Amino acid sequence: MEETELLDRAKYYIDSLARGIDPISGKEMPDDELLNNVKMSRCFFYVSDVLGRVIERGGVTQKVKRAGLCEFALSDEQKARIKLSETPLPITNFVKEINEVINQEEYKKLSYNTVLDYLISEGYLVVRQEFGGDIKCPTEKGVALGIIREKREYQNKTSYVNVYNVNAQRFIVDNLNQM
Image 1 (spheres, helix red, strand yellow):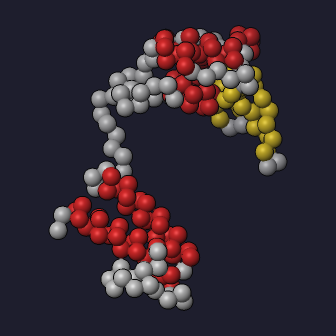
Image 2 (spheres, rainbow, N blue to C red):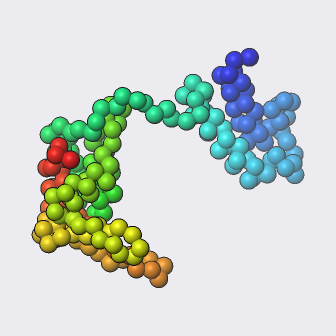
């Protein structure tokens, strides 16, 4: 029996169990049967979904990373589609917006570290030793651009995050090719 046939049979068994049906006899299982427990049923539905995805990929258990993707690049049309936020965003959120407009089948994603390295090299951020690690802080030039260091409280802990206003976001988009 081929691998895909085995996967199809396993999915059929799991689907039957998830619906409270004995996959061998085709009969309904009694309510007090362990295999008919709600938690077990949910587990079976989950496993069935995973098996379905494996079958769709031709038996591959995880997404295959494709070699040979082109380096990150954006056309002017793609840059125009990037959503700039009036609310200042952390760099990770803004880079996600940038990556939304690329063809991820052909091009590598932009890394937020690439953006941060560029901003450091151009004098908009500086690396300082704080809180036992390297912290990137805006310089005067960075603050003038629109990089704001915000203090945040979470579960009785204080942390700082750099957020980028619409002007800083626009600057990043305008300079993507130099990064």
